[in-house]
Length: 604
Image (cartoon, rainbow, N blue to C red):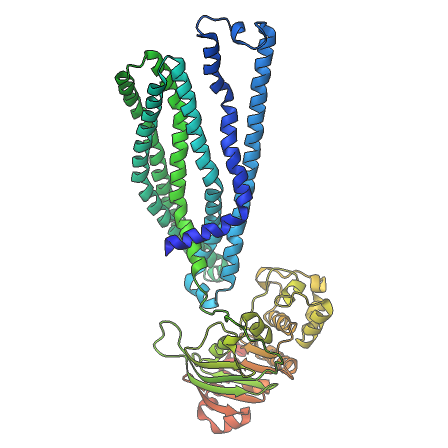
């Protein structure tokens, strides 16, 4: 399967760039041919004059024996050929650079698009290190390999062909019969090819295995760096800079050690190529002796090995690059072959008149590796336009209910319905446009306020955005920020308070005008007075919409109803006053939450 995935992936990224591949390949063939024209002309000139030995230069120059004219013509020819070869080389380099850049972009775009469609659980399981490695270093290596592979292979073939023609012509010019010259060329190529293949095979497997280990070390280093930079405040707050620097240093040095081993095995392959070429000299002497070739033939053959050595070295480097790139290709192909756990329906059925009715039918769900389900037979129906507070102890399944409704995961059993339609029958785009989730720690991006608010609503105009800010009580924030909608939010929204971040995040989902709002503990971490104001504003903002709000303070929300979850099931449902009066578990929960809130306020 890995090989099939790799081949499919290569076809997908190569096919759109076939024109560039053809151009670079053609130039890889033509440039060596043009550049070697003067060398290939030497035997012909020698044959024309019988023997170059003792013949004045003027006699072999164009121009009827007139030295100056002939020399000028030869120089013009050589300069013209050189300029043509240089122009071809420049064009080849430009095309290869363009091909590599576009292949890298194609790989990254394809990977990024696929990864953005994977559910959050996938990213939590895999971690940032391997994904960043695939999007950066792996994509670069794949592009470099594929962009150079075909032109380099043809270039090697062309170089060997030019060497063969040049050597054959030189041998025949030195008096070696044509058949014997062909045998010499075949003997040299056969000996070097076989020996070089054995050398490359001996080092290639170890090179590939070393590259896989280096790839894993790089992923671990990237993951550690990402983790440390994301948590730099926590590190500094605990005075752990030295501790984390030591840990990161070990990871980075381990990556360097692994990469050194890759370089060592690659260099060993190149060194064996040099040994092979040197070992070919006695083979040539023996072959020439057996063929009764004149000493002049060896004088032609041996210097030509320098040129052939370059072609053989290029072939070895090409094979090494194939072995180095295979782990990157395998991982990229594997990532793309991994089907999202939450799949689009084969034939989506759109909602024609969404009203916002939500229903959970016998829903059961367990997280991977958990001993017991977090939801175990939940039956719950929310009529359109009702605001429902969902409360319960940690681990009772409150947030999981919201995640199932937007299909961050699918239930193990039972159904989740929106307007009497199983959410698995809706396209993910339509579902998440109809049902908007405000996460507990909603992220704002380092972009303008306008671009943040348009996330999910790219066509919303400024009036729509301002109206959403007004409903979310974020208008004072717009007035405070210099530039209003054009103001840029700092990385990590560092220039905003916690309450301001949540109001902008609420305005962002309101700009999409969803039928159902899901709010996951929007007041968490805020002082009680701020939480009270935020919850009051939220109650006004969600009026007329179906709303499920996970909260620790249902007494502050004034929801239409409260659903109390206990051990993965709906233990009670009713107004806040009814549950506080009749449900002991609910009263104990409220008492703990109020005490915790009072303690936090006292600490501040």
